[in-house]
Structure formats: structure tokens, C-alpha cells
Image (tube, rainbow, N blue to C red; front, side, top):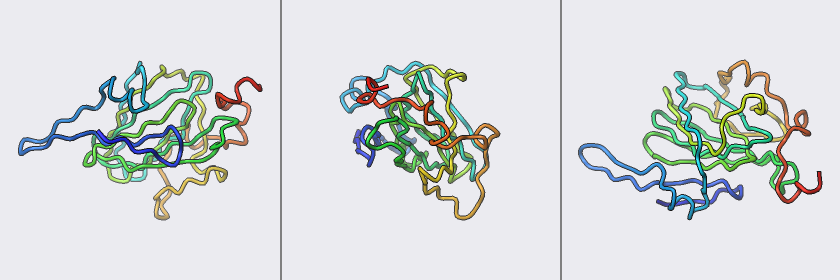
Length: 192
């Protein structure tokens, strides 16, 4: 596998080695030793799977405050514009984002470390997304950040079309509104 660093330290793009022949393909989607050596240590405690049936479905931006989840994300059908945002108070990269195209064709994965918000836009439908998490989902701990927060200014490839959002995502708050509820960057944790 190849691991590429993104413009946000800790967020990694993984290109698994895909073995293809006339029957189809085979790939390892996770190998504890190899992924740990690349900086994706786990352990993973929950696997999630979502299916979006329409082009333009936007899910996110989601995170957990006290129990931040690391997420290893892949798209097994369709294509998505996958986004990670550093929301750790005190981080030198606070409010910055990075994105990668994940698709059933490229088999890439995005590692979104704990303390980062995650979201994606469906760019080829239907899209099925699977991701491994380092923490269990706790609804009472979840933070929903506005997908269009001007402080983050994600360049979603919407081409002038309004995204299809859930009620929860429509009610997402800006980083400024969530300031005291955001996770703390480890170097700044002792200052709170």
C-alpha cells in the first residue's frame, strides 16, 4: 500500500494494493501491523456503512467531543468528495480542511484522526461508504458542524446545486457557535 500525507498533519490518504484479474479484484482493507506502521494505529471498535441514493447528498460535518473518533473511510460504490476538518481548539491547523476523492474504482481510503470533523458529498450515485471507528458512537457527545461554515470555507464541488441534507445537518452550527464544545488539541489540553 501507499500512504500519502495531505495538507493537514495526521490526515492520510491510503492507496491499498489492488490485485486485479479477469475475475475482478482483491485488496486488504485493513492490516493492523501495516496500518499502525503508517500512522493509523487503531484499535477499531465499530464499523459503519451508509448508502446515499442521490447525487448531491451531503453528510456532515460530524465529530464527537469527549470521545473523538478516528475514522478510516472508503467508498465501495459510487464516488464521494470526502472531507476532514481540524476542529481541535489550540491546534495550529484549527479550521483547516482537506479532501480526497474516494470511489469504488480507485479503492482509496482516508484516515480522519480523532479531533477532526468528517463529512462527504456524493458525486456519483448511488454511493455506499464504509468506515472503521476508533471509538463507539455516542449520540449525546456528537457535534454537528455547519457544512457551509464560512470560517472553514470548504470548496464543495456542488456546481451551483443545493446539497441534499438531513435535518440534523441542516441544523449544524458554526465553529464559532461551538467554540467551547470543541475537542482540545493535546498540546493545549493542559491550558484549559
